[in-house]
Length: 187
Image 1 (cartoon, rainbow, N blue to C red):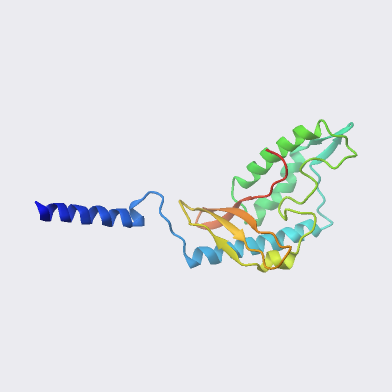
Image 2 (image 1 turned 30 degrees about the horizontal axis):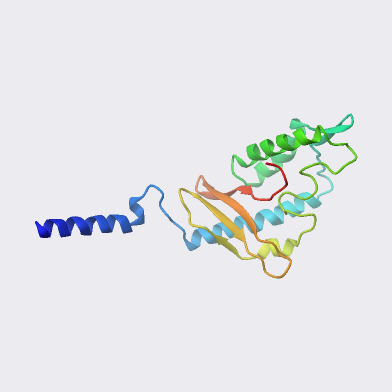
């Protein structure tokens, strides 16, 4: 009897200590960190190019009398670039549309001459100014990978740099940006 209880106890301890026994397996590897870092650094290089490209000027916040409104056709045209980039997940654009719909509700009550809610900083650089070299090369740390998702942090390198949280998801075997966390003052 004592031997059976000991074996049962050892089996339970082994199962409890084995992360593969859980449906939320932690699988954080150097390969994940390397791929996630490459995606984030490449995204910021790509996005900086998009922002600076004067041939691509698509404003989806358009005048509507004394206020702005969201032009969803122009929104889709602009965010098609994001979809084609290969850096963002399938639900990234849907989340952005939902976000800007919330912003558009504020615009209805704001004078067209004022800086509109959600537009006083770049949402992906999370500021009005940015250091692209920092965003292209800063160290990235990642939280535990659970069910193909993780949170990555772009680590500050010097005074004035801000950590950036980026939610990542593995889609079709590749890491993609699911959300770039930036408080734009909208809930």
